[in-house]
Length: 278
Image 1 (tube, rainbow, N blue to C red):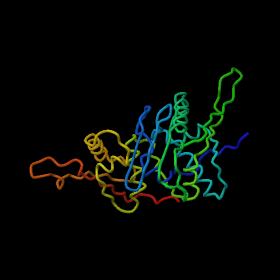
Image 2: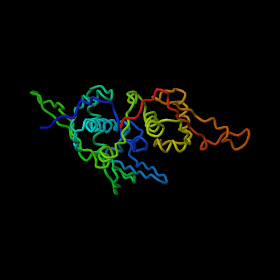
Image 3: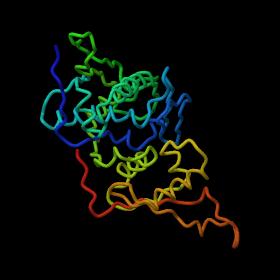
Image 4: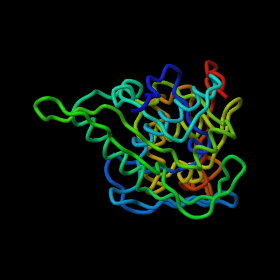
């Protein structure tokens, strides 16, 4: 017996560190290689499980759980690390149809979230954590059977990892997401998250290569420049305008092509950007 935490009646929200840094593979298919992000202050190492590294689409499950948890905290309720919800409500929130394929993808996502190994020096809830952990320490699909013997999914049970649970419970650095997020492609999703978590009140200028690393983009810088130009021209990032630097100041000398590594990207909040939800 269990009590469902769904339906989610508030907006979708996510933890700020997971928005700012590249914890997920920008892929729809299995990503089997480790992901590493290091700066002077931040270290992140992501190792694949049997089904690969958790993807940016698998992250939808964590966003849904974080939203359920934040809604409970806002209501003054006690929260545990265990959550019970229906796949139907998750699909409703994330704009996924309830096809048999969607249920199969959910099962795969849960396996990747449980199998992916994360190691980071980012503190959560005032505590550091050495060694590896998984996003979900437990993930189960609870079924009932019809008279004909067919399985019918009743609920999903997950246990959130200590690190993310502490971050949401104690730090309360939780920001709302635009509903349009779920219609974006992988790179656009990460760009929106980085903008949302780091560019709240004023424009931010980021080096092209620094942004590539922060997004977790695995292809070449030249390829990334092309992708960013397309995103900037399309102007489809919710609440933000993206502008590519022209590279004029990055040219080694007159008549030469600009140094791609020296190019910049400007992220500008649109005037209608809503305030953060805490």
